[in-house]
Amino acid sequence: MAPPAKTFTREEVREHTTEDSLWCVIDSIVYDLTDFVMAHPGGEAVLQQVAGQDATTAFYNLHRQEVLKKYADLAIGTVQGETPQVVVPQPGDLSEVPYAEPLWLTPAFKSPYYNESHRALQKALRKFVDDKLIPEANDCEATGRYISQEMIDLMAKEGLLHMRLGPGKHMHGVDLLGAIKGDQFDYFHDLITGQELARTMQRGFQDGNMAGMTIGLTAVLNFANDETFKKKIADEVFSGKKKLCLAITEAFAGSDVAGLRTTAEKTPDGKHYIVNGTKKWITNGCFSDYFVTGVRTGNKLSVLLIARGEGVETKPIKTSYSPAAGTAYVTFDNVKVPVENLLGQENKGLAVILSNFNHERWFMCTATVRAMRTIVEESLKWANQRLVFGQRLIDQAVIRNRLAKMIALVESHQSWLETITYQMCHMPYKQQAQHLAGPIGLLKMSCTRAAHEIADESVQIWGGRGLTQTGMGKHIEMFNRTYKFDSILGGSEEILGDLGVRQAMRNFPKSML
Image: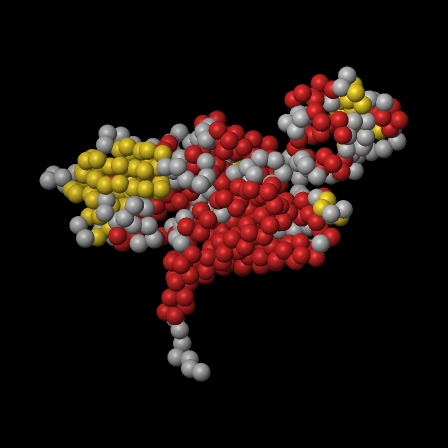
């Protein structure tokens, strides 16, 4: 919002230094703080120190730009003959901060991977996230509430729920944010989707925003044995009327999927399975209507779609991020499931479970790299404006060295991510499973190791503010507290590193030193 048109000289501003009339200047905009003094979180004394003065440096040493937006009604005009100099991003804008955007979005750079449809989708997504999703994310993270039905309905209308599953037949005929058609959607559009949605920088909400559907619904689309059944579930979930999650992990078995203990026994008439067991750390489980569930049928594994109903109970689990994720402990107590709800073939459920791991892990990498980039942007801004010992942080060589390391990690992983994405665009699904499981596993392992380094370096740059959940360093604190989710969920670093090496050795030539 533009400040009022009225202008004042700096001499006029200096006349307002009392508790009855207290003004100051921030970036050439004049603010009347008289009625705000008692409400100021830092107390009256702090404002008295800048009364009648230019408080620009002092303000940006303590506050984020969004504070001025929140209290825009305190602005009464501008300084005569001056114009504000600070760049205030508007919803949908690209950042002008170096390395704040991937190189393909930076004017001076070119990329062979992206065309105009990618740019159109990115622009529409950026505006949607800034205008709609970030306010929702901030509220959900602060209060712990689940994502609202209104937001789910809006995303369904705009095609966002379809986009979360990547390219495929489910995209045909779908309009995506009015920017492109679903038929155009490829894995680079998918990459853009993951990175733009991660810009909320609210990790609990990020998973609460239909992550269960993202990793679970593909099992229904690819392995449901009846087309009518498949269409019913897909229509319910894509419309936002029903929520779905993936229920594989147990207290007894995480990465060791073969160790699942939840059982499914057929009734004597062969028409139902009776399911008993528990699942733990199930994302979106608290509010889901359907559970894509790994079960033991005899000595083998199978996958069932279980509807919430009699015998299904969910309890929230407290984790490092907010309850907005809907992380649940799920109990199945003699749950009666029609045999028609079997996904794939009985006793061949491992193939169903493993089939979506590549996309799930790759999609997690898109978000991790984007979050790391945001931490770099925040840290560059902070180092440029924070004054310590009479000079900016960025003037210290040790700080520049930390930032250089962070930038290098982000840019190298973005490049690796794009290389794998290009392969995904040119490989059928079966070839992806054959050739990319190892590289994607190694990428995810490396991304989360890089996140560890960036979290550590950024907190050292930010100091106490990097440990505070509100204010200047809120994104740093959030990232430092929650980056480990990505190193555990979807397969731990150790498991994925081992997978990458084992896949490489499987095709090892008769090569000797």
